[in-house]
Structure formats: structure tokens, C-alpha cells
Image (cartoon, rainbow, N blue to C red; front, side):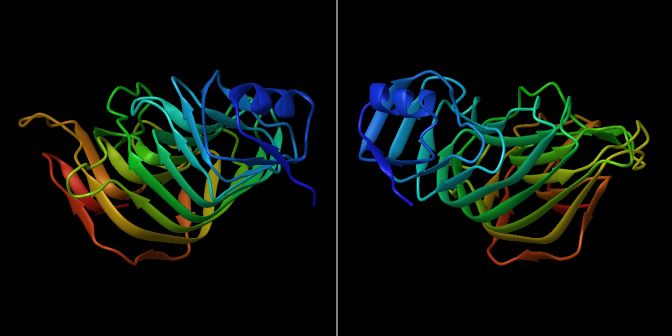
Length: 252
């Protein structure tokens, strides 16, 4: 495959506009609006710095050996929910500041997520309004969130998630760490689309949900599997540490 090298925001935006299939970033590129990769486009290398939402994936995209930075409360990587089938979205050796937020909602009815090495250096998801409600409590989203929100039980999203890390001892992510889930009702019972994960393997996780003491109906977790998710195997290969009130370590 022939890679097109870009080193400025203008170069990157032109490559995206032209539908270049393989983009290689050289150095640090900053000053872009949100970038949406067309179906099949691969991007690797370098550092991308954004002022708000960052990389939006569509279908069969690959991000590899790239760092994506945005404000901690924004989404560093997200998906276009107007795409009915997002094919396989692959993240390999990716580092981000900001949330990774992949949702099955709106038009999305199928797809597979393949992660092999993802570090969320910092994220703050405490302001997210959408939270699953299970067993009398709301749960904070994660720095990495993979969530099937479709109410139709026929909608199944699949994933293999290897080498997910979030936060550090001196900079824990604010909210949950890793969050995977499907559709559930107000009482916490799975009642719609399923998130089916063959393997969830995490590295080092540090979280602080920032939940005030005496809050009875809000929780977070370092590694969170909520209703509607079926995970064949969860392996915490690194330490999982939580620092705040109502912060579970592992929760399902």
C-alpha cells in the first residue's frame, strides 16, 4: 500500500477531502476541525492535536501508532452513527487524551471493534448526560466506552479488546476506566441490542470518578461490564486502582 505523508493541517484536510486511502502523519499536526475518515481509510503515525472533538471513524478504518490529543472532556475518537454497518474499526498502538466513544445508535446496526494497544492518557467524562441506569444507580461512562444503545435485540456488535490502559497514578481518568455495555431497561435487565466481546484484556487502569461523599445513586468503575454485554473472558493483566467515592474496581 502506498502511504501519503502529511505534515500540516492543510495537508491532512486535503488528503481526507480527496479520499486518500492511506495517510501517514509526519510530526505534530494541529489546528484542524474534527476529521472524518472516509470508509476504508487508514491513518498512522505522528501526533494530532485538536481543540474539540477529534477523529471520527465511519467504516473499516484503521488508526495505528498515532497519538490523538484533545481537551480531556471531549471525544478523541468517535464513530459516525449514520453508518448502518461500520465494518471493522481497528485501533492499534494508539494513545489519546480525551474519551474514546464508540456507539451503536441511530443507523448503526452491525460492526466489529478490534483494539490491540490503546492508552487513554487522560479523560474527564463526568459531564456525560447519558448514563446506564441499573439496580437503582447511574453509572459513569468510561474513558473507553463501547456501548450498544439499540433497543432492537437483533442488533449485535462484536469486539476484541486487547491492551486497554487508562490514566496513571498521578493523573487518573475522571469517570470510569473501561466501559462496555448493551441496551438495558431502567431496572438493569438486558432488553435490546447486545455487545458481544470475545476478550477484554486491560493493562494499567487508574480512575477517580469524583463522586461526592454521600451520593447514593451514582457509581463508576475501573473496568465496567454493564447489562447487555456478553464478555467471554475478562483479563486484568495490569493493576486496576480507583481513588474516589463509589468507585468500584471491577464491576459487572
